[in-house]
Image (cartoon, rainbow, N blue to C red; front, side, top):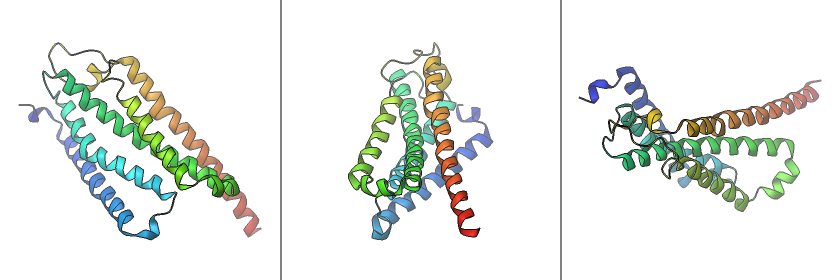
Length: 201
């Protein structure tokens, strides 16, 4: 009954994304574990991002499909746990992308201080902050910032999530990170252009 309610194209697309996310990021994690040459300090950001995206494919995408069906039904705590975990994983992934952009910005524009400050301990702290902050933001609905159970008992994302939380999430995980990444990569691009003009002219 529920399966027949799923849009075919949506389901196929989500499953393809999940398979590529799981396999692709698993390859990255295995390569990182087996090849010492890639275990550079800054590559730990990539490992963290790969772990987050692996979990998005493994747990997040199936959760998105389930909530599209309104499942789990009649279990509000299970519903909020599943949806909060979905938000947690996506938020951690975005924060890791932001951390990579900050790292590249710092390396290009402040190369001397970068070498001194960006140690293994610093990277570990930044990665930990990404995971803790992402978990804190994502679990807000589980701890009460939600709209309460639907009368039907179904678990639809936009109906059980608080509108205020969705607005907050939109700005914190999409608007602000995007603006920051555009700024960082824009600065990097300008520096590269400047250096290229010096070399060729």
